[in-house]
Length: 294
Image 1 (cartoon, one colour):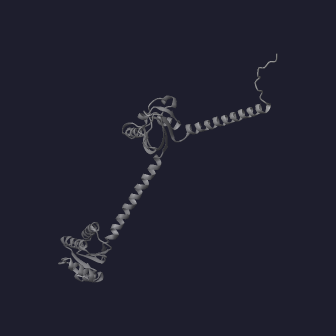
Image 2 (cartoon, rainbow, N blue to C red):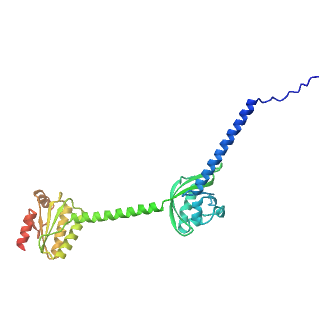
Image 3 (tube, helix red, strand yellow):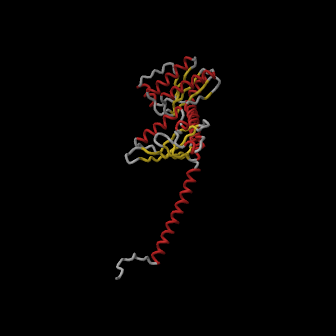
């Protein structure tokens, strides 16, 4: 009798060689992946940024070397423990607690700043980016955080802001002085040429500068020149009258110069009472009159 049992198909040498090449390729690819993984792990572990993996209740899954230095413990020592109380003591905890609350609800908190405290007590501000891993049921499973220390940058920004505010304050003070210049004409005469618009704040500066200047110089005559004042309205008229009354209380006289025809008409229409105030057409004529009186 003949044996009718079918023998298994024999693989050809070419198929075996192809299979071996495929296995070798997979082994090389796997070795490359292992190498890249090791490089990635090394970079993450020794990165200058704070990198951690935490459970929603703050327990540590992983912490890199930067995190270890801030906490003051190794990854093995802090694994499974809650490091939030160490990094965010006291009033700092409220911010991170709010962050975890928003993250658990699926809110977007991927770009934010938080201040932490190292185990030595030093406080640092970090700019954070986080990845949230959720389970199939939609609950938060893990928070992967990447924090870059921006403390020095914030300090520099605050210093620049402080210097800028100082410069603005100095410029404002300089402009205020330029807007109300008090010029000594003689030992007893001072003049204040006004240019531009006069609002309530500038009107008060005019009065303050005028009174302090008269008091310091012991002047008997103050000349207010409004040649350069573009618009004379009720507010400007009131400011001039207040300045004149204040000067007279100090025992000095006010001479108002630079009244143009349109300004004169405006003052008349406004019913402005200039009684007791000497008026002259130009600053030069006002100075001449004051010198004669002196």
